[in-house]
Image 1 (tube, helix red, strand yellow):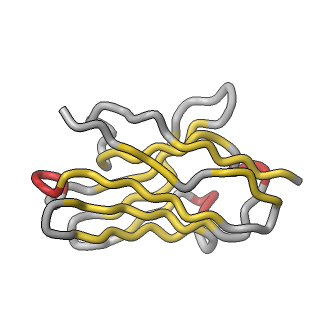
Image 2 (tube, rainbow, N blue to C red):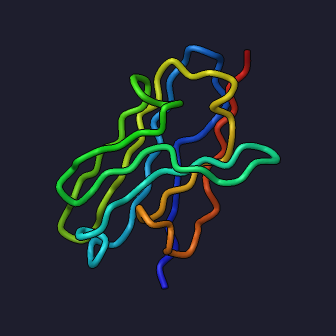
Length: 116
């Protein structure tokens, strides 16, 4: 089973931007809603943003107006991006990419740290 691989995290000052990416095999993923999740220290994993196969997007209130999720279907892969602008310290956490229902095996995630 192919593991989801996330990238693009890092350390950034408040107000900065980061662009997260994940790549999955096209296969069934091209038909599924995809999403980004965040797990802050000591907290449960939560949905940040999702995008369905028709590119309809939804966002948690915390990211509305600042985050943009997008997807690109290539011949063999689906790439899902999360553009994060105007970052805040409360955006800190490990970010994971998964299906909209969160049922695919979780990857390692990518750490996002926003300093004040």
